[in-house]
Image (cartoon, rainbow, N blue to C red; front, side, top):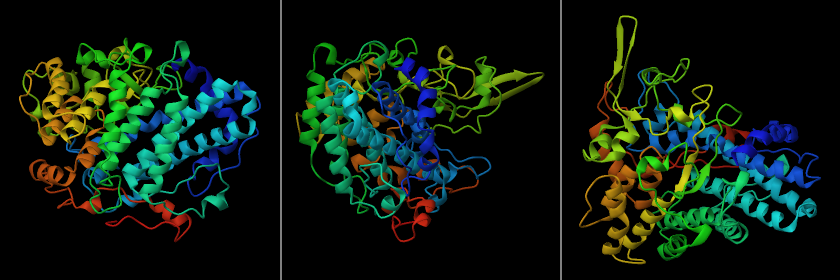
Amino acid sequence: MKRIFLFLSLACAVALSGCEKDLDQLPISNGSVPDFYKSATDFDQAMTSVYSQLRGYPDREVYLSEVRSDNIYASSAVGGRDWDPINNFSTLLNINAIVADAWATDYATIYRANVMLDQLAANGSVVPAALRTRYEGEAKFIRAFMYFDLVRKFGRVPVIEHALLPREVAQIPRADVAKVYELIIKDLGTAITNLPVSYTGANVGRVTVGAAKGILALVYLTRSGPDYGIKGPGMNSNEFDKANALLSEIIAATGTARYATQATYAGIFSPTAENNSEVIFDIQYFANGTVGGSFQNIVVPDGYYTQIGLSFSAGSVEIKPCSNDLVNTYATADVRKAFNIQPGFSYVTGATTISDTRPFFKKYVNVAAKGASRTDWGLNYIVLRYTDILMMKAECQMRGVGGSVADALLLVNPIRVRAGVPPLTTLTLETLMEERRREFAGENLRWNDLMRSGLALTVMNAWAAREDLAPPFNKITRPITANLLLYPVPQAELAAVPGLYDQNPGY
């Protein structure tokens, strides 16, 4: 898959250049379908272009999930960075560039998936039948994944299933959350039917039936969470049984569909062991080419690169420290702490020692994966891994579905043992979420975990009271209320067609 991205990214950019200007305006408008899709090669390149839209997804998740959560206290020294209002639960996020980019880029990805699906229906006869089926599954998986991202961030959003003209899009209001989920579940159902269990050669890295089942299980868990009274991703739907069934299928799979945990925590993220048995869905990157990753650079200060001997030019804007609260939750013997978190940096320049004692995530900074610059890394970004499947299964059991607390401990304790800490003798939903926090630190899952579990308000308000004490005091809006749990509709979207969208309460 990395090879496909490398050789086809330029071709896709040229082929789709006729609609790039309009893509930037989604969802209020989009462009006409380019005169393309005449051969099987065209469809192959177009499918790659849909995947390529995922390239910036991890970057946005660092800000909109990890910075938003109690894992990072990212209040800048100058107080005017784009991430400050996200960290601080500002009520002015409707004009925030990062929030606006999440909305626009998700819809740009949906647009490309919609074009692909429309053209498969219109011109897909030039593609062999089996491949046409797979392409439909891939495109619908990515469309569902983007809508799931949107509904978790914004709640109600417009549902657009085809590549429409601008005047048509300008008539589509925000849909109820249930309607958004209806499309997500339908698309993932098609993906489960159409996708293979695995790939070989250059196709390794494309989405599989395991990825579709895992994301659908997470959809059901998310829907089952509390609604907080905000028309957000939680619906109190009590669909833990549906999630459990899918998770059980993944765990019970055999042969080429079989996933397994890695022997060591570090082995999961090794650049020499990518696409290992723990990886279910990841975003592929290739250094020294056109598809290098930049998410590693967001939280890492320049000084650390100097300390480890990388001669990247200055460009990392500012350290975004891990919260003291997260650092202190790790046991001394927990190997995940040292792997995930760097306890500051120090280096000598001339006669001066430069140092900073604040901790930060260095989980993905591996010299073996470096490219030509700080925004060109070759390490893949894992969206879903097998350990997450096991812990989601334990979450179902803690909800009384598919087993008992004792069964949940049988899933959680081997993960702790791998990390070098002793097994637990009891488990609650709260302690399970703390286990997830330590295991997935820096993987941008924490905010959605808090939302889904119903702990967002209690945990974040208690954390802010402890952590938000650096001068000037009390930067975080307090109390953090239910209306601040969703992000606002970007102001640019509201202004494009006045009256089409309403704003989320609290903004």
